[in-house]
Length: 100
Image (tube, rainbow, N blue to C red):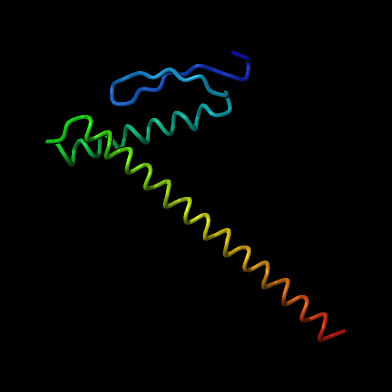
């Protein structure tokens, strides 16, 4: 392992998972593990009758759903930004034609 990498232990649902990561990504990995554990705890409180497999599956689905929503929102934002840029280009072109 090079000096830019590091091994961290991530604990999810009581199990430890060693990960080799880039040092610059440590905070992101720890925040992701915290989010998973918080979501697991939330589902565990809501669905006390479910086993760990169901809780982990619901957590994975929730995280994937959140990710999908964020990606779609970002895609729309990029599309809207491109439309605005195109609109500005057309307006500039028309101004040149009218004044020239």
